[in-house]
Image 1: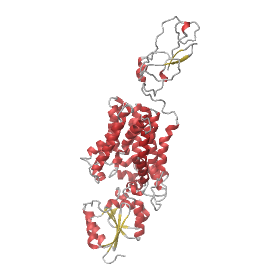
Image 2 (image 1 turned 120 degrees about the vertical axis):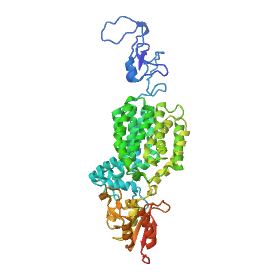
Image 3 (image 1 turned 90 degrees about the vertical axis):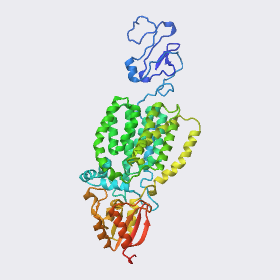
Image 4 (image 1 turned 135 degrees about the horizontal axis):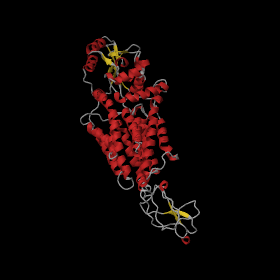
Amino acid sequence: MLVGPCPGGSALPLEPGPGEGCADADAVPLLLPPPDEGPAVGLSSDPSPPEPHPVRATALSSTAATARNVRTPHLRRFSCRPRVWSRHHPHGKHQEDDIRRTAAWRWLPPLLAVLLGLWGLERAGADGRGGMWRDESVTWQVAHRPLGSIWELLGQVDAVHGLYYLLMQAVFQVWDGGGPATGGLWALRLPSVAATALAAAGVAAVAHRLAGERAALCSGVAYAVLPPVQMYAQEGRSYALVAAAVVWATYLMLREHWVAYATVLLLGCWLHEFAVLALLAHGVSAWRSRGWRWSAAVVVVLLLPLAVVSARQAEQQLGWLGRPGWQDWAAYGVVAVAVLLLARGAAVPRELVRVAVPLALLPPGLLMAVSLVHPWYVDRYVLYALAGLALLAGTRLAAARGWWPWLLVAALLVPFGWWSVWLRTPESRKDDVLAVAAAVRERARPGDPVLFMPSRRREWLLSSPELYGTLRDLALARTPAASHSLQGTELPTEEIWTRLVDAPRVVALLDPAGQPLDPYPREAVKRQTLASHFDLCSVDEVRGARIALYAQPGRCP
């Protein structure tokens, strides 16, 4: 700050004109004597003063002013009222203070994310048993394979999740909790909890950089409480880790740390390649920077090997997806309207709008547009886009005055609270492999033939090897590990038919009623043979699955 005289020669702050401030670190002291002591002199240890000269303003050099992105202050008037020129002054451009400075508010967003992540982490049902759906089951069984076996698998399928499987393999080497039915769900999901806390801290850091501490606190908390964020904080998949990488890459972009930016964003892309869409969102505000252009080129080039491999696997990996439905477009429209409304007005800094709006809208919008030709869209693939929404909502709330914004927040907390509770139940996922395994254990006898319809539902039992090993898999030709695949390979159609008609009874695991039937010949022969050669003894619905017991005519129990 600048200092000027008061009666008696005391130094007090000099008030600059509106819109012309400088950070404290850039202040240049100017000492003026009392009015009756003649013209000003500079600070010096020499007792003999220099020749008098007219008082003139002292400013930063043009080089330093350019480097600091501040303007030379204008001497407008003196004031003997003490005043500190704050970087949060409404007329001054926000400058980053020391982000490393420890403050209590910095711990609240990640701490809240951790508490929400640990709450109901096992997703236990009414029976007290934890839940795990089939995608998490894939993580569990693949990450327990040897490194060589994982590498061979990635050459065939699921290369897009390869780095995540390797990270989880390292986690399970340290501790796997003894299995999914015991403490294994904690080992499976804790990395996602930690990543969500890191992402919440990153959202707060971005908001602090662009809008100040109050906005940082509100934005970080807003991200942590969003129900989809809570959902994937408790899931043994890569999406929370990808979100953390994208958020911190955004912060590094603002700091212009380009090597670190490229490294962190590339890590996110290798965890899931659709994180590359964040690069386009960043380009909206950073494309003029040569550092960003070089970083973008490095990320794209180093991502190409994964993109080439996964493109060959796309049909096998994403063949089950359809084009975005009206529900997807409606949800995107609601988010887009909310984002654009929150970005309006002077309450949200323009710098934050240029970062948050593209991050919130471009990745999901582009992926949905591409999915009209190649159906690749799933909302969790672009989970990180919610960081843009949280930045806008938190900054708007921080700038709000009066009671009505808090009344709106309180109203939203009611459905958010109900949604959060429901997310911690097994019913919140498509299925529950542990519940299916428990139901099969109750209904099957050791040595019973089991048939998976379709074959990819073999995943329901692969994470319970102690049960799966007691049953006879009628259609299996090679195990998942031996075939370097996720669910193994099956026998030719004729051999499946021969094995099936010779079985006295069959435990069949099927999708829920109403699901599309696979048209493949192996699946068709399973359905036709059961219908023509067996009686249906019983059917039980179990959390996204049906367990049907078939027996030869007249032999139902």
